[in-house]
Length: 102
Image (cartoon, rainbow, N blue to C red):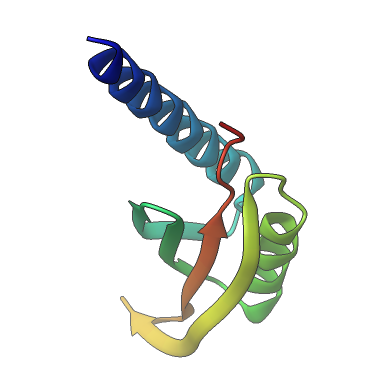
């Protein structure tokens, strides 16, 4: 029974951490940038999105780097993409998810 309770507590902590990360992303994403995919795996977060310029991508990277929830924030790729005649920066960011103290 204690093992089940412990497992449920761990799931609850992980879920809370994931909610905090999603809240962080919503808070720090620049106005002229959009997320197209967020994947939260055990220990890692992968983010894909579009921005109007490199400036927004670098602002977003800087904000993520300052977060207490994320570590080792890296720009995996950045390329130009044209959508509906507008030139956009397509980016992918990978970072480690801080493990809670248990």
